[in-house]
Length: 301
Image (cartoon, rainbow, N blue to C red):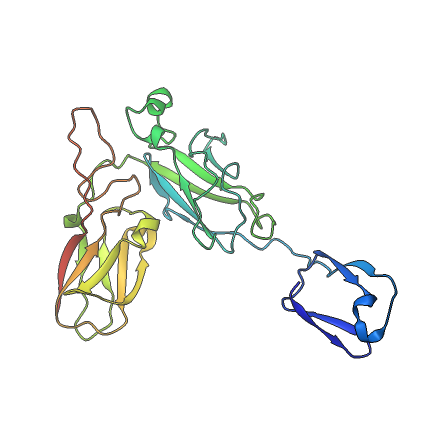
């Protein structure tokens, strides 16, 4: 172990890094190695430990997205936000969907355990089985969709899901949704409403969508630029992910700007700009997926 020693009436070791509470360490002192002392006694060994810290559960589900009370029956993706970093486990076995009769709805989520966390392990992505969502796919033909318009569904996060310290959540989490009709149409920025700010102000550019968009993708799909320069600023989402606001870090200048929309942006059912997720039959033409951002101009006056 890295560290240094001092000898002042007694031999002391100072570790370069604090000892871990609750971990056991082996200590060995060999007097024969202290040349100037002229000692020849046998080496002494011992096991020591620093008392562990008693912890109580303190992590909880801070939010769920979609954040509204309605989800389409062909929902593809959800997000759980935790108050503190979570452990290595995925959501399998810890997330269930319960109908209004109190019965668990089976086979809603793709059974994955890994690669669904953000870097901080505070956001977990829940992927609903696209095979059941997308029509004319075998799981859909055999079982149908897991969610049905007009019904209710409750997302349950069990308390036994452990955080980074191996402790359970403070409480079970529940959020009830009303299931709405399927969303099967491509996104179109023509349906968006932009409210431009005033020149010389730092008021927000406000963008209102006709329907909620995907929480995770919305955070990294929109930006603002003037000419060839990206504008620095802060973004925030409207309740229900049905709007987006951008506040610049310096005053707006009079003239043209552009809202840049990355082609990865989706609504709750996986529909993208100019390309619907659902293909109804083999004869349908499938639009080519674009890799070019969509530009929405606006003018600041």
